[in-house]
Every structure is written in C-alpha cells, then in structure tokens.
Length: 459
Image 1 (cartoon, rainbow, N blue to C red):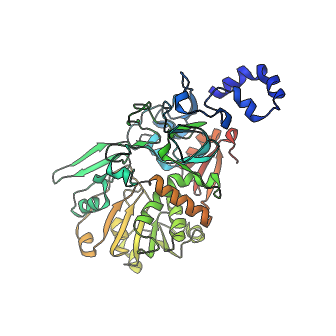
Image 2 (cartoon, helix red, strand yellow):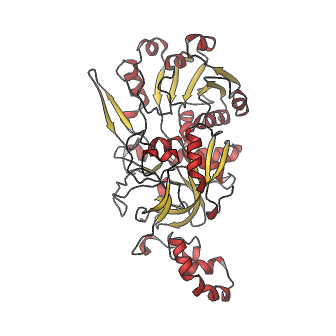
Image 3 (cartoon, rainbow, N blue to C red):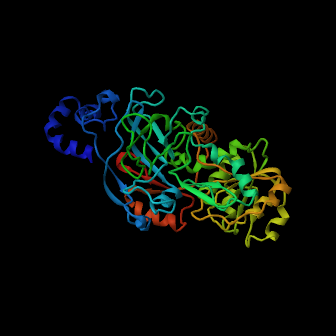
C-alpha cells in the first residue's frame, strides 16, 4: 500500500529522470519511499528510520469464521523497525494447520485482526545495523517463532522454543501417573496435580522469559517494538527480529523451503533429538498428512528404516514414494491392528491431532526405552492414560514444538544437499480464502504454498 502510493504519486514526475539515468531499476528505486527498496543503493539501517512507519497490506482474520473463506484484505501496522530487525517482501508462505487453529479460535481467542502464516520466504529489502548474517537482496525465511529473550539458559543453548515445564520426560511422568488429562499444545500449558487439572493460556511454547510467535503474539523484549503485535505471512511484507531470520540456501527451491520452516522443522527436530538413523534405527511416522509426509522424507534422509502408520491404506502408495519401507494400517485402532508389529520401533513421531488416537496401541509398537513423541496438537484434551503400560514397557511419551534457528539451518542444508522435495501445491495469494477452505477440508496433498506473484513468486 505504501509502495503503491509512492509509485503512483511520483511516477510521472520522475519518469524523465529515470530515462536520463538509463531507466535502471536502481534509479527508479532511488525515489521510492523507504523502506520498500531492495536496492543496495537505498539500503538504510534503523538509525535512518522514517518518522512515520508504513502500513502493510495482508489477509486478515477478523473473526472465528475466517477459515470459512472470510479473510479480508486490509491494512495493518507492523512492529517498529529496530537495529536487529530484517524486513522482506514476501514471495511464498506455506499454509500450516496452526494458521487455521489460531484464526478460528481453536487454540484460544486470537487477538483480532490477525494475519496468520509462519512459513515465510521472501527477498530481504532492509536490515538493521546489528544484523550480520543476511543482507539486502538475500532470500530468507521466518518460521513459527519471531522472538525470545535471547538471554536465558534455553536461548543461549539454542533451545529458544523450549520451556522447562514442558520437557517431555516431565510430561511422560504425569501421563504415567494417570494425572494428566490434557494435551500439551501450542496454546495451553498443563500442570497436573492429584486433585485437579490447572491450565494457563500461552501464545506458544517459549524460552524461560517468554517468546513471541510470528503471529498472534506481542513483542516483549526491550526495544522499539516492545508491546507491538506480531503479524504473519499472508501479506506483501514481513518484519521480524534478525535472530529468527534464516538464509535460504541457494540450491534449495524457494517455494519448497517455505513449508519446511514450520511443518518441516516440527518433525525434523524430534527426529534429530532422538537419534533417527543412529540410535533410533527403526522410526515410525503416524499420520500421512502435511506434517507426516515431512516425517517420512526426513526420517529417510537421516538414514532410518521408516514405517508409515495410518488409519487406512489410502495413502500407502504415496508413503512408499516418500521413503516408507513398511506400512501399518490401524483400521479400528484395536489391539489386533498392532499385535503383528509389537516392539518393532525405536522412535515414533505422531503428527495427528485426533484426541481419540489409540495411544496405548502406538506405545505397544515401541521397543523398551523407545519414545513416542507428539507434534500434533489436538484442540480437545486426551482421555486419562493408565500407568502400567509405561512402567512395564519402559517407554516414554513426550512432545516437541518447532525448532531453533540453528536447527532450521541444519534442516535446510540437509534438504539442499539431498534435494528433499516436499509435495506441495502452489496457490495464488489472492486465492487464500479458497485455499484455506480446501486445507480445512483435508484436500492438501500435502502442503499448500501461497505465491505472491507481484513480489516475484512463481506459480
């Protein structure tokens, strides 16, 4: 919006000047009001901020019915630019299930108006003076986390998304004791006591001192942006703290990189943490959807023997193409479905978000010492779980959320080196309402990526 006004008001006045200077793009951008110039000749740091920050345009969720095709294209105000910020014009943004859960209020009432989307890839057009790892003109990305305190033990150890209360072993103990009746997900933290279940609302999992999600969050770190809302990638531009901006490798397709920034790293993180292909030779992936298909691709890339687990055989052929060498159809979810495969897996990543999933059946697939890690986040609580399946089988139930910038970089390098190709369907940004409806109706095979053609994205 800001860029368009600058062009429309100045184009005729400056046309002759552009021709006299060779009509170059750089010359044209010299007069376009900052910060939307990607030219190095017009690069500024935050010490040169304009007195009035520009407005952005994006698809805004205004109410819980937004995912029924009711996102509205309108203006909003980004966070004030800071010395450690990066600004980019968005070329691609993946559609994540989290977008729908948030926009609809399934994970708690969002702070409307809200622009969702946290699988963002674009061209860097502005960097703060403290940013050293990306420069103007680079292709960069932002995932589900936009900020954290950067000072606590977790942040300094590259565990920015983590908070100690959510450590998987603590959760497993609570489940085994029959005390935990709820799922740990990105919006509700659970403390178990003998008498009651106590929940507290959170924007997402965080560092010791609080983190900010890429959307539906509030920046809390000291600086110009403190108190500002965070907005996501269903838009023309994005602005975020540089610590959480990653450079996209040159050898990786930009559109394919976008859904890796949340969906990809959500499964890559526990695969790496729990030794897929190393100490965990045999890995199972539950659910062959957007997250699950990433699980199959990355588990294979890490050298594991991969088993796909689904409620039916409808996606068996796809799973085999993605790297699965064995397929388990659970059908009814009863014991007979699991008995032939008892104690055959070292690690299972569960990507489904069905509160009725047969967790005890999945646990029976684990060898002693094995892990069942949940990355799908149901909107409703799980039923209570008995203790003895955990105690007698020596298995652990845990959870994992997204991944640190360090881990995202590692994942992207692996994807570039091994040419990992997620199964995506590109959708024009202006088609977002139909794309979200299709996503909600489980039509994606296996991820949708919004393409902003006016910013250089290619359909």
